[in-house]
Image 1 (cartoon, rainbow, N blue to C red):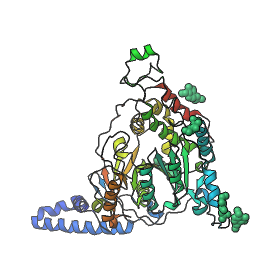
Image 2 (spheres, rainbow, N blue to C red):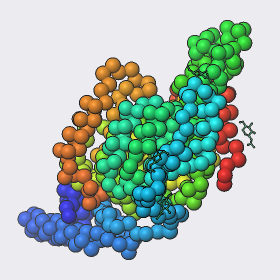
Image 3 (cartoon, protein in one colour):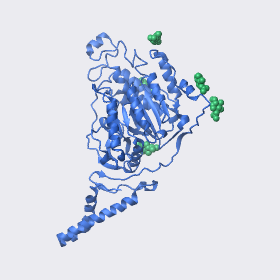
Image 4 (cartoon, rainbow, N blue to C red):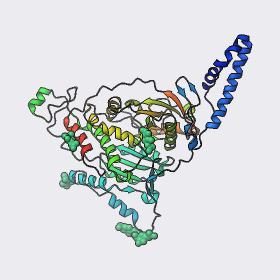
Length: 484
Ligand SMILES: *[C@@H]1O[C@H](CO)[C@@H](O)[C@H](O)[C@H]1NC(C)=O
Ligand SMILES: *[C@@H]1O[C@H](CO)[C@@H](O)[C@H](O)[C@H]1NC(C)=O
Ligand SMILES: *[C@@H]1O[C@H](CO)[C@@H](O)[C@H](O)[C@H]1NC(C)=O
Ligand SMILES: *[C@@H]1O[C@H](CO)[C@@H](O)[C@H](O)[C@H]1NC(C)=O
Ligand SMILES: *[C@@H]1O[C@H](CO)[C@@H](O)[C@H](O)[C@H]1NC(C)=O
């Protein structure tokens, strides 16, 4: 158990003020001695305080912080066995039946061989899968969902080489077998399906964005032959009667289907998970959102539990835990064993990696769905920042990990056009980093290192979301009757 260096003088000096002043007048030397004794006494008291308050059970929940230095707050929290809570769902694993021909029948039921060019069949298959909500590996792992559980959601596009890397990193994550993994696709492909079927480390469900460009390849929300070209002048567009010539974005550009899909997919996925998946109907625990080009550190679930404890004790108004960050230098030696955590308000470019929250955040987003659907920005994260600033009461406050538990492998993402994107090299680099810092993983203490000083603003919309067809489709997710 250690106490941060800055804490000592801070506490010592402030406790000297009331009763030292008289002594001070006697002599400088005695005053200095007094100071020294006070600091020492403060230090010892502090230690006792820490010992006394180190939480090991629920009883210590009421204990707050033990020192303040400027804006820094330090607390300790140890992750014991999580207290069992009411489960919303409990399915026990079934022992394997070697005499049956189980695997074969399951796979046949799971996916049919749909020719990719047969969009009508694809549409039906996607509806079937989203309705059936089959969970793979239930017989092996069972499933218990309660307030302490974690549902991990991956939004994936057509990048099996990245998804494979993410899944391989997941296989090593401690406690993963107790989580439910949901993979949300906007492309149906045998290769991706096979990859998901190869998941052997936890229960997994696939869901499919039903309004994908793949299914609607020649019509909205895909690209319709009569759609206005992006750079068409408005007058020409109106003249040529191309689709929605009256509705370019705020910069005068027309819709590009390929850039609109991710925002549709993102909001549809949240709605589907919270409102339409039967297993999660009464689920109160956290959902962690990932993208397909991440790599996870093996202690990410462990760290999430630490953060959750810190939130309860020290930032009850934080609604989100963020497990990853984009900092160039990740100092595990400093931030690692103590798990330094920063408190902040949601900023799209800093807090969109490994967002973890429960239904209460979804309820807030849902209340603001109209603002989400009409805000003229094709990025879901900018849109969410706009909601946080302008629609969600009190903004989205969060705790973010200073030593990242997630690494962004896909440098050649959707927008960036980097030539040298070698995922294997990036993975090597991350694995080396994690191996070097192995002793700093599974930290036994979290410490709130203060508040982010980043200036908040309502983001200026980037455009790309001016077409009312996008607004209406987005709104439609919220007013189709769901299973609940
Ligand atoms: C194993 O599977 C076979 C064939 O499906 C079935 O007849 C048998 O009852 C099963 N045995 C057990 C113990 O579940
Ligand atoms: C399992 O099913 C497949 C296809 O239905 C069949 O070819 C195979 O012989 C079966 N295996 C066993 C052990 O019954
Ligand atoms: C799909 O492609 C196959 C082979 O290229 C072709 O025979 C078939 O007619 C196509 N189906 C549709 C629905 O376009
Ligand atoms: C869900 O998160 C909110 C904070 O956003 C918290 O107040 C609430 O207690 C959480 N619910 C559960 C069941 O943990
Ligand atoms: C559903 O969404 C459409 C499109 O935005 C809207 O016009 C309609 O009023 C909505 N219906 C309900 C019942 O909310």
